[in-house]
Length: 311
Image (cartoon, rainbow, N blue to C red; front, side, top):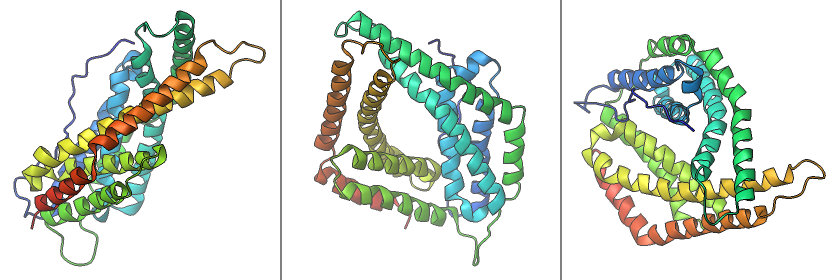
């Protein structure tokens, strides 16, 4: 699949020169940037760009970052408008998520492999291409519905209404950061302390790590070690668990495609071996993570994070 070079680089980190300032100004800036990134990737110039794997990936990441910002800044947002934007982001993310999952598989299996017979490689590639094409209508509908400035207009109206909406004084950005980071980290460390070894538990840990990661991107300005020391560890957690998830998902999809063969059609020779191999690689990836993510490493990392929070 041809890749389109992405010229626009959305901001990962939120700027804040003075964490002691009232939070609303930084909230306005951060949410504007997050929602603008989504609007940008909804304005793909051509059909080829809309379905380019990198463009789809960037749009999905943009929706996740925007969703994380909405969750973190909920006390500054009008409930109804925020709910509508959250619902919209979910629709976009779900539509492009299916396409992205198959793009990942396509990237893994696009090259010929010496360890797989040619017929099974041809069969698998045909299934991936068919599944990716089947995802196109949902992606096209997203672009038709939210492009031409419609999403940008929704975002503009939401951002214009940002203000502190709770009782008591508006918090400083540093105080908001401590609250939100503590919450995200608490979810992550609670999942980590369970020491999951099965796929379902490790998947929950991966999701909690993803939320923690996006929270750090929003609030790292209050403490440089969050960006320099904590974030790289969370990235490593995501990378290792992501590999296990990719293999597990591939095994499930390949097995499902084999079951869906037309009635009377022969089961592709080698498909069972391919499914077993993906399952073994998923299990090996989980073991590699657990060998790295020891109790000692986890405990030290938790202490290190606590020391990074503003006092």
